[in-house]
Image (cartoon, rainbow, N blue to C red; front, side, top):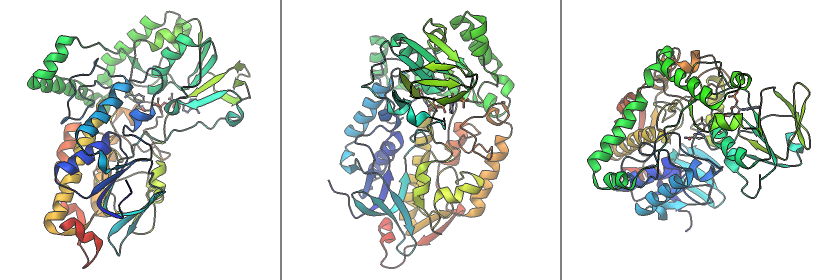
Amino acid sequence: MSLPGHVSHLVVGAGFAGVCTAIKLAEDGETDFAVIEQASDVGGTWRDNTYPGACCDVPSQLYSLSFAPNPEWSSSYSPQPEIQAYLQKVAREAGILDRFHFDTPMTDARWDDAAQVWRVSTPSGEVTATTLTNCSGGLSAPRLPDIEGLDGFAGEIFHSARWDHDADLTGKRVAVIGTGASAIQIVPEVQKVAGHLDVYQRSAPWVIPRNDRTYSRLERVALRHLPALRRLYRAGIYWSHEGYVPAFTWQPRLAAPAEKAALANLRKGIKDPALRAKATPHFRLGCKRVLRSNTYYPALAADNTDLVTDPIAGVTTDAIVTADGVEHPVDVIVVATGFHTTDLPIAEHIVGREGRSLAQVWADGGMAAYKGTTVHGFPNLFLVVGPNTGQGHTSMVFIIESQVAYLRDAIRAMRAHGLAQVEPRADAQARWNADVQKRMRRTVWNTGGCSSWYLDEHGRNTVLWPKSTVTFRRQLASFDPEAYDVRPAAAGRRGAEVSA
Ligand code: NAP
């Protein structure tokens, strides 16, 4: 199917956010929209992250769209293939896939102020759109470490989000660089098959037990046939996770019981005191993402695993060299060093009203938006999972649905009032961000004694939301035109199409 020349609404990305946006636009009777996706399927991060052990560390009942419950989850924390299959099924059953253009990356997007449209370039041609919704995700661009010699490594090397399934790790000497959420799921799986495993740790994470269990047939039948029970169950999970908010955003000492549970998990998994000391975190729980695993510590303690804490000095053709001068021979390197989060590559390709890209605008003060969703200087641009919308304790799907509700209300307001252009005012955006950053000062992310990917080069946390998700949802419940500069469509211009 060829890309249309113009649509009222263009959505970029087909993960949870893109699928949710498309379903809700269709539900609102919007008939003129398209979704472009650089890969050849829906799924986003759940399509890309196929590493062994890939699993969600947020309970599945909550990590699903509220309007598309899935009573068939096999266990409380679903493995990646189930989440990917869920998203495919939801998109298919909603009947929206004919709107999706796969293998169609957005290479450039420029606001055309005269025509009041976004001009979006793709390898399949240009499409103009009245609104542009970026759903390309905050964890989609792998970050490779800047390690000398990495390019010259002669063995197999790949990022956790680009797993090479042709690489056979059986009996090999494998190195995993990183000890974040991806690495702690990978390490136990690799340890089972590798001849030898070196885990390169820069800082030890907090790892709490993962209370995973398989749902019985009876439970699944009950969840399928008793929607009230399903809703109650989901609400229970939601509120139990929300219970972390005071500890993370207000009084980090409240996380002491969770720290105790994590240290008990460490003692249970690792008996050797020297190894345990190396694996003990030195910052407050919550400062980085809290990890959940029952198998990570036992894998570190296994005979074929070494936890390497000396910094990596460089890589030769067949070894990793640490700062103490030791050469660690290796056949396969798994780079589990995370993603570009505060320097999103897509920001370089979205150019606003004044001819500057989002990346240029954000270069000085860091990423910033109004309500994490709209940006001054970028009319009719909506960012789902935008600045300061991230969560360290609960499901991003809740945030995505809140932002999509705001987008829908903005489109309704544009239609109702014949507006071709909405752009948050600079003062409204500045006030919003001043409040967010003021609230940030007390959070564990800023005071917990760690440096994390939540903080940008200026030390500002431009990734996470420092209040409860209830507050987020309430604040985005309806579009607020008083915070916006709005313009009607110029006579005969494309933009008028939104005010049909
Ligand atoms: P990450 O949390 O950013 O972890 C990257 C790891 O690599 C950290 O341990 C980091 O050390 C280390 N590292 C980075 N650069 C390094 C270098 N030059 N040398 C040595 N070590 C280096 O990345 P991730 O594990 O891929 O997880 C990213 C996010 O994805 C998570 O926070 C989470 O939001 C999401 N995720 C979710 C799930 C889930 O189950 N829902 C699973 C996987 C990922 P430092 O800690 O010292 O910086």
